[in-house]
Structures are given as C-alpha cells and as structure tokens.
Image (cartoon, rainbow, N blue to C red; front, side):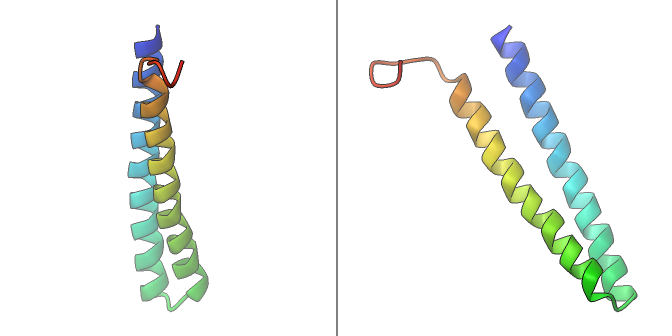
Length: 72
C-alpha cells in the first residue's frame, strides 16, 4: 500500500512539473509575442512552481525511506 501511495504521489508530482513547463513556455511565448509584462511575470510564477514541485518530490522520496536508528 505504501508503494502504491509513493507511485501515485510521484506520478502526480511529475505530471504537475510537466504541466507547469508547458504552461510556463506558452505564457512566456505569448507574453513576448504580445508584449505583455503580466504574461511574462505569470510565466515566471509557473516556472517557480516547478521548483516547488521538486521540493514536494524530494519530500515524498524522503517520506518513503524506511525507518532507521536515528529516524524511527
């Protein structure tokens, strides 16, 4: 059951990263082509969400690690 939860969490995290990459690229391109500083700023926020997803990914991996003497 724990492995199933790990796989679902990782799948959701990687899906979020992929969506944010696509959204960020589309927003950035539209912002540059449309001369819109707001869209470029929104693209930057989408790219920052990728960093947040990487932090979540690392947390999921650490949580899945088996307990040891120092971390019961």
